[in-house]
Length: 126
Image (cartoon, rainbow, N blue to C red; front, side):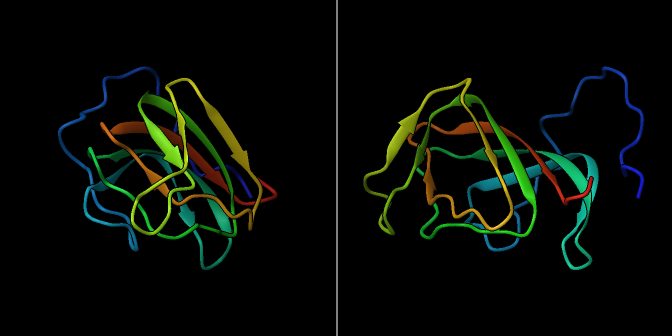
């Protein structure tokens, strides 16, 4: 299957519109799909998205999914492994990276001051 992304040369992203709360995420976490699309039901596709946390927002349970995920923390702070009340965990600064295979448990997540993540999601084989 070919990669489902269009050829895009450098262009300025509109950072003021096109944001939405992903299904199952709390208010205050938003995504902006910038390339491709992921068909989770049929286990195919690839997408690149921005994910942003508003200050103080956190998730309450670990995530696990069927696809590969690469995550780069562009700006802000990200805490990994907080509890269901948003307490505890390990804090990471900008310019940190994670690569996760399918079914790898990760999170929960919190950001004290807010953050911006660049994420790539894809099924194997790409």
